[in-house]
Amino acid sequence: MGVRSAHVEDAAAGPPPLAVVCVVALLEGEPHAWLFEDAALTSLEELQTAWSGSDGPYVVFGHAQAELRGMAARSWEPPRVGCVMTAQILLAAEGGPRFRGRGWLEQLAAELLDVELLSPMCTEFDALAREASVSLELMRRMTPQLRRAGLVPTFEMECSLLPSVLDMERRGIRFDREAFTVLVRGWQEAHDELTLADAEDAPPRLRRLKKLLSTYAHWGDTFVGDDGRIRCHLHPMTTDSGRFSCTDPNLQQVPSTHTAPGFRACFRASPGHRLIVADYAQVELRVAAQVAPCDAMRRVFVEGRDPHRTTAATLTGKSEHDITDRERKLAKAINFGFLFGMGPRRFQSYAEASYGLELDPAQAREARDAFLRTYPGVHAWHQRTAALPRDTNDERVHVATRLGRRRGFDIADFSFTTALNIPVQGTAAEGFKLAMMRLHTRLPALEARGLLCVHDEYIAEAPAAHAEQVRERVVEEMTAGMRAVTPDVPIEVEATVCDNWEEA
Image 1 (cartoon, helix red, strand yellow):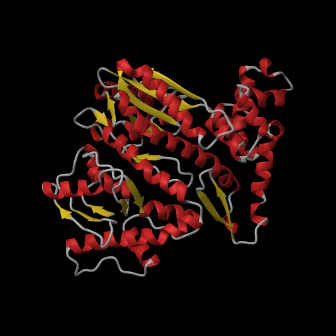
Image 2: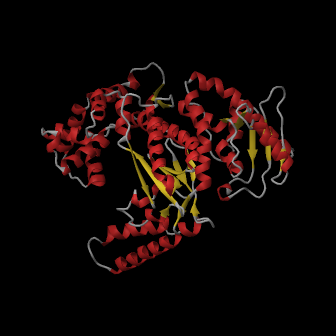
Image 3: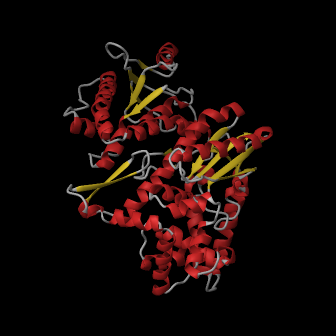
């Protein structure tokens, strides 16, 4: 099917007052089309019947996530979905044309089909029908390209993920607006006091408060619905690695308790419910052990050891049991800094900004050498990746995730750090997405639902009586999802039952 709907931007708050939809279904024989308004129940029932059941048609959308938002309030989930925009983004990372923003479908139709999508003489029905027909033809054209590039598993995963994403967007998470108002008032009072102060430490604290006020103070009025829940838009395809981004508002950038005490406590469970907050432990290092592959790093996790203590032991010559907290902190910076090919000079700045550690150039070089000695498989992976531009006869080089998501580089624009980052962060994103799909189908049996994904963190809500059982299920499914892409490395998930996000 191809579907185009209008007036879906505010669908997270409920069904749109008017939706004009044209549907072209991939059924036997000629495609079928419907045009209807929200109140035309006969047409709506006809549409729902057409794609219900496991044997329903394959449904092709131009921009599936945006267009399904208009139907999400009705809990309609087509059994099989294809998305032209998703296919285009995946193929663009290979080196194909990439179109974003207004008019992207028209540009893609002109590029691949050599057709003009819209005409000034078209009626609304004709324009919608033509857009649906073109989406269908684009999908037919791009499917062989996806096969040749080995992108079909990634494409199918991204399309199958959408029901869980839309469900999270629709549900939102309860937000204590009154507590947040008190918190913002405290930020403002502290800001005003510091403005009048003449202390040396006032400027950095003042900058932090200004950022909190300018970025977040309006959230209570702008984003909290009448039902007391805050909703966002999740974007699973806007980054090269496949990691989620988030807007309106960006709940992935809610500051930590250290930066803004009390903020995360405003995100609360509904009455009679608890939150389950689960996070992957050291997931990038675990995925890197698989992707590189690095047997030394894999053994650390198989044996249940701490990779930061292992690195610190190489650096200091001590046993892992004798490592101090500061030495472990330095090793943590080393592991996360050098994993993606950071140079010693940049590492000096990173260690100071992120961990408060001051190192001279010789210490930074020694830290890098210790990391590469500790994990020789990672060192070999770095060397292979650095050699990619000179080891090919083509004009482009590619790196890929475990499911086959690829990122192409013109040799002149090759980025060593990005080429290391994509396979690891992309594979971790794929494992998380597979877990989200599993949780979307399994949690409702326990009267629970996923509410939000934040980087490697998953937040669900469950009745208090089932909360511990749901916590166990979340751990089980998140582990299984990530294990599908890292079968040789143990996966660890830490999960907490709590009343608000700050307690996790």
